[in-house]
Image (cartoon, rainbow, N blue to C red; front, top):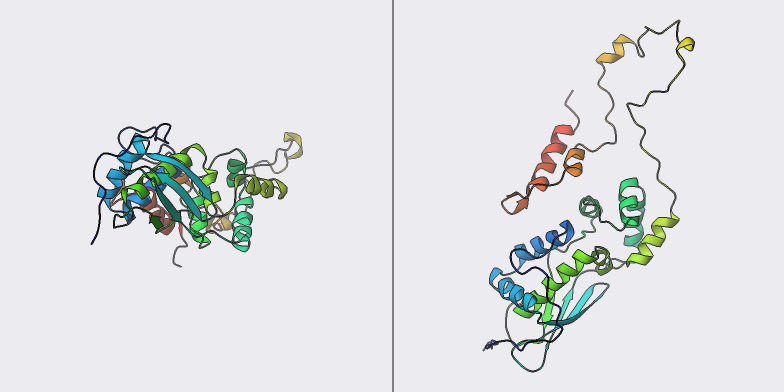
Length: 270
């Protein structure tokens, strides 16, 4: 027989109430992405009750360690419930691979060293088989309610999402590497080689080029050749622009367009 918690929750003095009082919780793209994951894999009714708990400050405290978040959530009974949320923490070898990939990209490295989370990190992690955000969550709660997540677990998840808002490096710390260690490693790696600008032209004085000033830079025959595909990703424009708040079947429009851009930018049949 399943038991349910009834009655008004006991108010908490100094609880961790989220700032958002209506609408979605999470302001930064990484915390919104985490909330999107929650809403895809969790029961919407339980999430709704969890949001109400998170907004009332029923989460008393929480702690994040590699692979695990623990929290105490006050319900209607005197004893707070204990919530544990687990994900896979990556080992040193996996983190070495991921850190090397991040350090090899100048923009990603610069953004992280500046305390920012580059949007492209989600795709980079996925390409390495080390997803940044979990596809499922292992949640335990000491309450007698059935179902995962219960409202106490949902409240803890929303408080965690807003904590990600304040410190994006918590997303990485949950996967096993804290901010200080990651940044120390990135600072200690050599600067990645900059991609040469294909439009850059070496300046030369006019009197040195008088004899061949009107000569073409390359033979006319080579103009018919298709230039070799460079290292610039076909979806670079999608990365540079601010993504619109539009979804196609719950998938962000930018993510839906990315595969189409890659297909259009791929090698053409001979």
